[in-house]
Length: 333
Picture 1 (tube, helix red, strand yellow):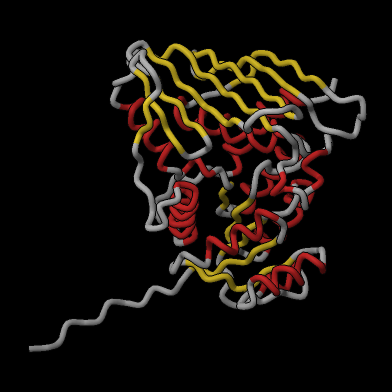
Picture 2 (picture 1 turned 45 degrees about the vertical axis):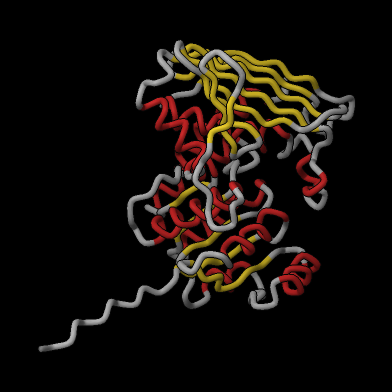
């Protein structure tokens, strides 16, 4: 009797990492935990950032420049984790070399440039995705399932609330561009995730009106912002502030006629039937850390994207919808 044929060996997806700041380093950390991904190499325009990454991730090859890295044998997918002002250049470089593109949000530092980038990627027929973690996070999946089963009743209101005692946060100290009005700010960096989540859950999210309080220094980002959004007919209120005492808060709440759910601390969910909030137990990975579980699920979907398999990751067109709302809030009069 003939022996069964061995299962074909599927090679890991080859990943190039452009940008070695906080989020680029996080990608290196998380990709190392995924057997379906292989970091072919990494690069940053800042030589010191390359040196730090080489010291902390000694198995990572540091390329001579961005193009050399993208052209390297075995690269299937280019992750772009630079500040937004450089996203378009690297997205188009990767596209012209025939690589899949996985970009951080926002697409670019300017809305007009973001529109242009979507047109350019579409013209090249480049497979692309944007890193909104709520595309994959178990907490977001739970919210989607509860909305789909109707157990919350008729949805009457959505609330988005963030507060940071300092901005940028301590772990973002190396990314000082986040404090600048030109391309940073917590509305762009954090509330964009909630706008994306609203698009995912309700199919639409549009700006009705907003108000922003700016610091005296015109180079710095917002101090506080509020807005009213329309999410497929459901009113959504948004509030954001930084620079005072108290614990940081990142809260997204959905209120229905029979119950309410809120996502807190990014990856945790609580529910209420009109009484006190109760925690919801969500699946976690072997680490028991909900953040790692969300990131690993995102990377599993990224592998599907790179292999041309079904996946939930949003593309640049959806990211443009998010950026249109966000830039409507923080656009300077």
